[in-house]
Image (cartoon, rainbow, N blue to C red; front, side, top):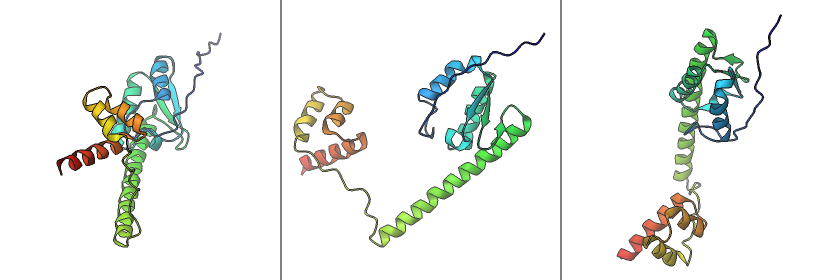
Length: 171
């Protein structure tokens, strides 16, 4: 008599790479069903993590739960000794390529700046209602997230606006 292993049929899709943290709906789904599956299929190891260290930590965390990663692009299964070796090599090569890409990008930007071609992103102008909203922030009626949302700017832009506002008050 033959017994077939139970199968889990859940899938998720993560559009962004996990360069900073292994979070997001698909990853949470993965950790939720880890005890029920033996393999997690991914498109490409380079989309899972940017550094060799991060990738190996993710793989180790999965393997501690008895789960193996299988990459469709590289055709590797981390459940085999050859797969583990190739994973480490591919991760190191991917990290090296990424670092080279960033170095070339920095060089091109520096050259463009010297030639006066690259000026960076245009600064977002400080809205007219900034002082009033900033006063509400200082009175703790708004937190930084709410202030940024009210001004329709990102947090880094808000930080720049606050610095400019404070420096203008001192002069």
